[in-house]
Image 1 (spheres, rainbow, N blue to C red):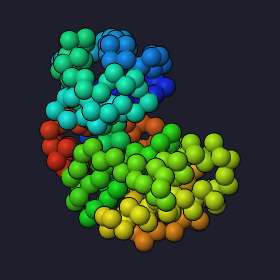
Image 2 (image 1 turned 180 degrees about the vertical axis):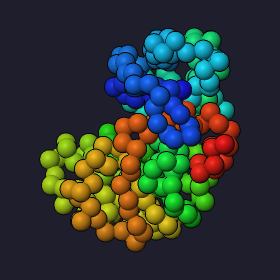
Image 3 (image 1 turned 90 degrees about the horizontal axis):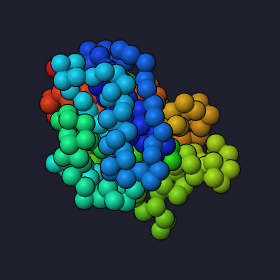
Image 4 (image 1 turned 60 degrees about the horizontal axis):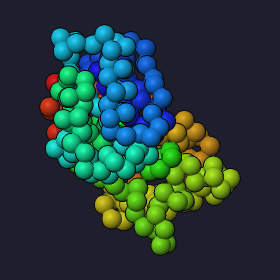
Length: 253
């Protein structure tokens, strides 16, 4: 099962890892406010109970909007600051009774995209960039995930890149698609200057509207729209329960 924790919703479903498809309809609960560790853990437990899940059914992966290292949350994106320093792995174990696999939510989406989506046939250094409320990044070298990159917070012209290149920034400023594409291009070009990426995959809410701004993008490397849409986080979280998935997104078995 994959579970995707976001600032507004906690979503999950069982996943067939051979095909990257859901085996039951996605179930969504509102993210509790405030989104404290205990409140979210209880919400995750409610979601697990909805599916009548047991350990015989398989492992559980959770994508968390945080840098996650060895089960510890180190940042808090769109969730309560009390997550910082939280032993999330132990928290979920104690609350749900299940040992879960935890990873950054952008990394989860990236795993799905590289295994089943637009990144499936891409080689070299690939950056999966989610443009939504903020900017999330997942970096892959020859299909291998480099976890917990926070490249959405690059400083460009003395401002956090999210201030101009996120989809929320466009909506907040009421920019045209052409004007906003200029800021996205500036961000991708800076990433390319630093990393020399072979390709970019754009996900998040922007992937559904790629045709509105694709013609205005300028970037030294190919830019592709993501294909997994809003299921990427769920599918990638489930995929992360397979040990090899972290090492090589293209070979989950």
